[in-house]
Length: 388
Image 1 (cartoon, one colour):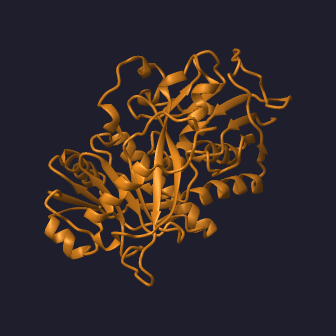
Image 2 (cartoon, rainbow, N blue to C red):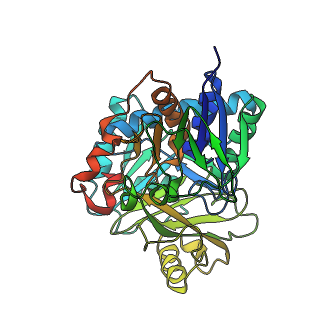
Image 3 (tube, rainbow, N blue to C red):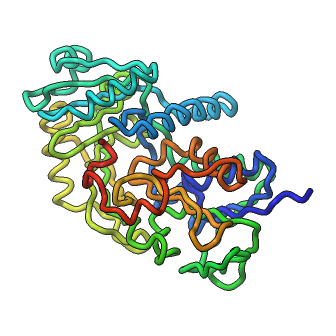
């Protein structure tokens, strides 16, 4: 039998892994991306991303993360790539540590190693961090760490090609004119591509391609990320001495050591203003730099006055409740939509690739928590839903 031809639009974490998994299951696969895997405009671009299984009571994500850990390790073991760095994650909480307590209970149920520390105990283990009186409790997630994001996106596309798939740098013309079933999509500059089924994993552009179904339910927000220089020869701020860390108080700040020698990464997880991912300015703002410097002075006093080596502006593409969107288009049975990464999707790429491949090939159905139907209801929990 002739294998089905499947087109996947978007070579980020969702689309790239889905394309590779579909190819490994025997489909003929063409992967498209407007600017290339891991490009600076993409939500999957940049040097590094956190990988964790801490999701409070949202057990569906803990389950997905556990599978993602397995698949990242397997990929590294097979291809000797080293994309996953297991540093552990240090969670620091202020007065409200309900998320940490809920996460610890779920992690233990899943047989994952987690420790609840006092600030004094954490200070002995990590003396380069200032545990002042704003920190009331600390959680240590042993299996967590970080991933090399841009490199991994490039590698997945290279693997797809090596295993018989096709990659084309092409832009899909939007909005997509959906028919039942969809047989072809138009490409910018003329031309089109035909297929038996389509997967659109377009990150912040998903709403533009499908304004009637997705539209404002995926909102790109502007997120500034900063890289600071550490003292010469000082390994305290590199892994393994420094883990991934998350400071959960009025705002959620987080950081990653090393970053391919680019610097000590610090970012504010609070969703920023709406952002145009195609043409928006990606320069850091003076206010953002000042705020993150004030935080560094408080939490990492040895880095007070550290030089700013670089910055970048990425974007979250957030759904109202921070759940992913993994569903069939209601107007076309052979069109699948994947998005709403909401700033926490990259780590799940390999596991979501398996899930989407099963849905597209008809061996599984999407979880209703990821469905389009739930977007008609009011969102739960505000901006921090992904932490609850």
